[in-house]
Length: 117
Image 1 (cartoon, rainbow, N blue to C red):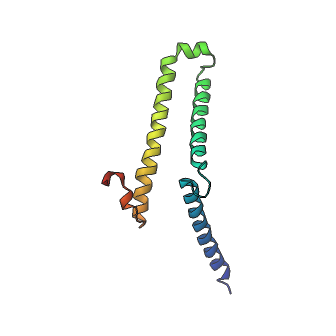
Image 2 (cartoon, rainbow, N blue to C red):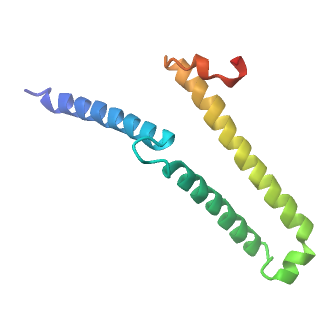
């Protein structure tokens, strides 16, 4: 009788993990009418990046269009650097790190390694 709460917690944890896995598959691949989800998340991430750059430049004293024109090279270089780092981080995390972690955990993902194709 004393083990019943721990068994319930284990079963609840397993149900939660399997539900999350099914939901993430549906949302990521756009099944069952959720084709809008992935582009929406990418749009939200892009807008967050743009807002972050805007706040960064405002805190650095670039507040007007005249300031922007004067420091145009700095703004362009910083913005391009941040966009490139964000995109490369996404690719590295999504296609390399998650794939390798999945393979280490025993998931059959060896065929999804893009460098094996």
